Length: 110
Image (cartoon, rainbow, N blue to C red):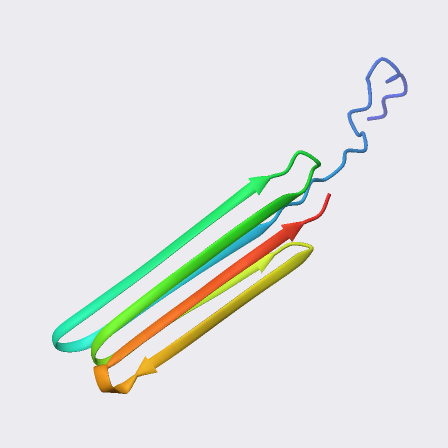
């Protein structure tokens, strides 16, 4: 089938700008075994859209484990034009304690 007269239809294909954004993700994990244990894992993320078309995302996390075989881990992920991220884990053998911290900052330019 061939249709020749379609001039009354309008084209819906039009160029549109694609907006990006800053993306952050934070995971915190803590585990310990034994009779007296304590574990705590906490994360927080926030994204802000700027008036000029850009955006900023920030996330942080903390994990604490106390007991036999303590394990604490924080992993961070960021996506944007500029990304700054840091993680640090400390093990304190005298107290059978592990502490992990991390943060991520992602900036998406307009």
